[in-house]
Image 1 (cartoon, rainbow, N blue to C red):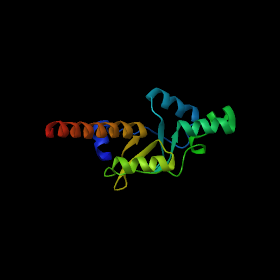
Image 2: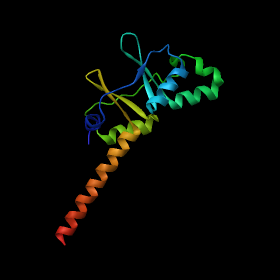
Image 3: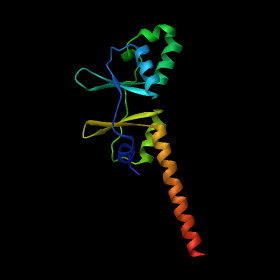
Image 4: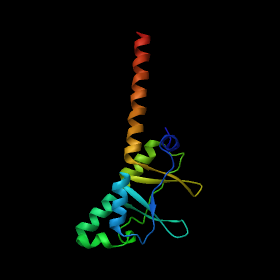
Length: 144
């Protein structure tokens, strides 16, 4: 299964904020939308980084409550990993595991086309494995 399959089902909506938005406002957006990260976009629409729940927790642990009034640019992950619509679930899981990222923006020829989370990928991987197991079960039962 490919990332594009997830995006066809999930859609291409990506929540983003400007680098100057304060962390508290970003946290409110995460809470209201029930999501784990927001993309941080420059004025020209370029990707500056990604702010996740983990980034906020680390900021609070290191800076205390003052981190909530800081701009998201102070806490965001700048070295963002990206996926392509043509990436397999296994390759995306490998990147997420190796880099310890729970969210990957998806770029198609340099254009943002969506964002996938570890939950999206694991859900589809479970579906894939379940379908394979059912197919094998049907084959074995038919051969017997």
